[in-house]
Length: 147
View (cartoon, rainbow, N blue to C red):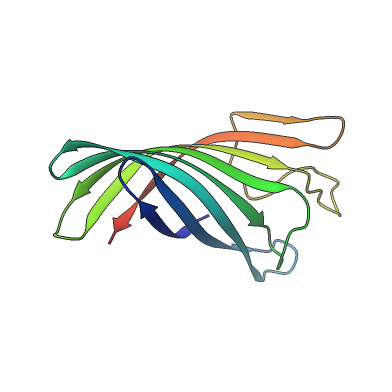
């Protein structure tokens, strides 16, 4: 997902994460742009390194609705994040860090018969079980601003 909006509620010791995400992709068949979106929930903790910096550890799971209003099949993007947060203003900070992405899906492309998400970049691990559970893993980067 390229655009994310999160609300983090709680304390530095433990906080809840409510997430809404979206991305737009060109449909190869007719050249239209189609939106995929996600709803997610997670937990995090923040360790103070310096009066103006934090180290955040977070786990989030998001239900991905891939190029349709609602995806009924199991289609979850799970993320494990470690981010460095630097305060740049009184109530503003910037953050960045690595993300381990784990996509679990039972979605099947009707035309090609391929299991799993078509949105994932090249995974370093991929497998599909005999029952149709597809698992993909890849490493990414997250960065942004907090207000």
